[in-house]
Image (spheres, protein in one colour):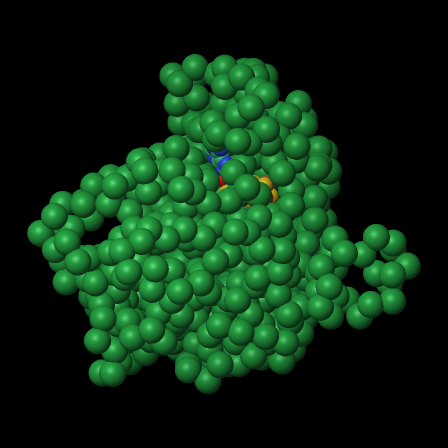
Amino acid sequence: MELIEKIIDDKIQGKALVTENKAENSKKLFIESYGCQMNMNDSEIVAAILDKEGYNTTQILEEADLVLVNTCSIREKAETTVRKRLQKYNAVKKVNPKMKVGVLGCMAERLKEKFLEEEKIVDLVVGPDAYRDLPNLLGEVSEGRDAVNVILSKDETYGDVSPVRLNSNGVSAFVSITRGCDNMCTFCVVPFTRGRERSRDPKSILEEIQSMIDKGFKEITLLGQNVDSFLWFGGGLKKDFKKASEMAQATAVDFAQLLDMCATQFPKTRFRFSTSNPQDMSLDVIHVMAKHKNICKYIHLPVQSGSNAMLKAMNRQHTREEYMQLVDNIYKIVPEMSLSQDIIVGFCGETEQDHKDTLELMEYVKYDFGFMFAYSERPGTLAGKKMEDDVPAAVKKRRLQEVIDLQQEHALYRTQQHLGKVEEVLIEGTSKKNPNEWKGRNTQNTVIVFAKEHYKLGDFVNVKVEDCTSATLRGTAVGYSDNN
Ligand code: SAH
Ligand code: F3S
């Protein structure tokens, strides 16, 4: 249980993000990122934009000229964490009044100008689609004016900005392929903070991947709130096409095709993607995964609940039965696939039976990993406006514990299935617990640790799995894999 909670915490932990510095840059940027991988990747875009403005990154808050915090609004706890950080910046600003503080991302979008009033220390508020405006906004701030840009865009994808990789291991990196989300799950604030869904030009995606490979990266994760609905129409947005016939004439690239293009063009590079929405995941995608060894056999497939009543109230566009059918198909086409979930317990009106349905669905799938949350009402969402957050906190807590405990059992069941097998692992770094051991992941995304011997960071190594906990495999390297 502790481990799973830690994973959840890690998902929302902020870190001072740093990269190699340039001698010609004289100003110092302290940037922290909270929330999803998309935010991390956005911070890399922001660092790239500010690099051109003369900023180097720093890990030392006290020496920063500019402090930026990229924020998350997904649950109340994420927002509380950021507010605490702002208090810390405030203390530093008292000693160093020249330091400027900016709030980026989802909280900036959600709270807009209110931030400048509520948090007197904030000089700059910038929403997720306005990062290109940062140089201009910083100009405003240097002239003593507060600066806000929270305009959401229908087409901004930052396709031409080459992100500066922050806190990178030099082996694995993220590439955004879509922004925003049109799904309007009733509990979720993302469509309001990140705006309409839009897909990025495949050409710029492939170019970015090529440049990452040139720098030595071995694994790329394609990112989007809902990658399966990726659709590129040679310039247009999916929503711009009113008629199916118009769409058919345009040369479209969907997610399965994009994945196929990536895996074919870069056969030595591992590909992952996140997140998949069950309603949009096509069997074509699974077939493409089956076709290419270099597409990792892992799907993050949030279900949220195993109860049809809850799925309906959440405005998820699939039933429990359709989800199970999809899972059956996935395991049929790729038997070694690993799956993970997001589950929300205690959503509005959730009964004991709804909760049991969730536990039962978990039994059916036996997820390899899971991210589990107690429902947290978000102002502005449909559930926030129209539904009653009526499950008592103590009940939410107990239900959350039950799903976490069950997930722990399933995770152990899944890791045990690897025992005795020889699996390809990409070395991503030194194990946190032992400096003499490497840590990497197999295709299923399970972490494996093993003795370093003569192997190096970024090598693909075959490892014989000898032991496991519910979260980690342990083994011995038996040689290089044929992917080096
Ligand atoms: N499609 C997105 C989902 C982002 S939110 C993606 O890329 O992963 C991540 C998860 O947070 C959701 O799947 C959901 O399980 C959880 N979540 C979202 N809103 C929530 C809320 N109001 N309360 C609790 N959990 C929530
Ligand atoms: Fe949120 Fe649902 Fe989109 S969880 S990000 S509205 S798919």
